[in-house]
Length: 169
Length: 432
Image (tube, rainbow over all chains, first blue to last red; front, side, top):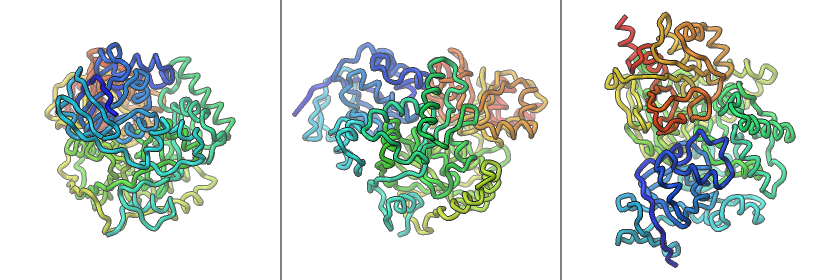
């Protein structure tokens, strides 16, 4: 099934300090409204006020490099962001996204096409998306982490009765 | 084809003879690291069905990121963590002022050769300098580790970096790290294990190895590794006698039994050879770690604030290098020095380094992470320029979006504090 989304485009090597500034790490931790207010604060001051539920971020290489702070994922969830689609992700960010139920899709070729304010059509079943008149394939999630994503994140997965984690990706 | 350190240590952990890069394993780490973020982790842990810690003895909690607490809210975080530590009987708990988790774990023998550490901190690869496997994960994952003891890990491919020769005087391992990151890029080792080998390794001191391995996080590495050698074992013996006088021999024997070396014919995805003699002092320019330039290309850049500290470059040799540069001089820029641990603080005091730094005009802070990530004292003002021995210079990293951060080795940072502008230490000395 296809869903339609509005894009926010960013470049390569966007780090977690500009996604969620370190100075808030131990003072803004759980409150969704406060988390949302600081999302991308040092990258794009128009994002937190302009983002709408269902929007997606499209980006280049190495999205989310730097700190392991999980608010760099949860602040975007708090904004209602549907997915981040990037050329590649830094490894801890990718894990945090999966474990919090944020869709992180690796999609070669997306970086060159990405512009803010475009329409992006996403087909998760087919593993492809359409942007700027072009169709791109994204890399399927590793089979072993699909059960975490399907449960809506690691906490929900463990709550759902998995006494012990099983192989992930 | 033989196996890398990472393959061997992960295979042993899951009870298999061998594993291949790309396989996903359920790993049971020996140490689970968290720090001030433990308050948030406790909250996630409480949501899980498992009400008991699976392995309470494997938790290691250090208060280091905002110490002493600058606000009532930070103090409350610490209070919640202390309550949990006390309720659960957690043995590896290190109070504010003891130092930065990565440094303290090495000093206290919490982690050692052949062990696996997973931590809710991106510099968790640090312990690889002594032959351990360390990797960073998220808060939710650490909560799951507390509950289940296990976590999924993908066996990494290896980037092998073979070192030859020896660093020239005045060049530090930070410069080697910055050279590698500048050359390979901020994602040059994403998902990879970086394993150092070659005759050049033996020329690097323990402190220099720690800084090098620590910085591989800025290249995206999953973990980084230096095989324990005579220097490592001597360091551990002295260190364990200091920190664990009652059981140091047993601990050292355990580390010796568990140490793992890579096979001589281990496969690797990428191989790089680096001649240490050709490394020169480098500076990372705003706002990316891989945006490196020779220090000499930046001579004259104004400096308002200089910072020496952090898990990357806050150890005794770093303070010694800084003291050597500032001895008998007065600073033109503000210099903040924060030792990586209370042990480093005490040793620097005994060696006279702190006196040199204080007499030159430096301020000394409580051992911890300091202003590195902008949560604690010492942050720059809007429009100011900071030169730092830390690991990240991202926009806003030190709490101020409109500040510029340059990264360098501690001697360059100290020389720049003296001059009030970026300068090569040798040029400062030549100017006398």
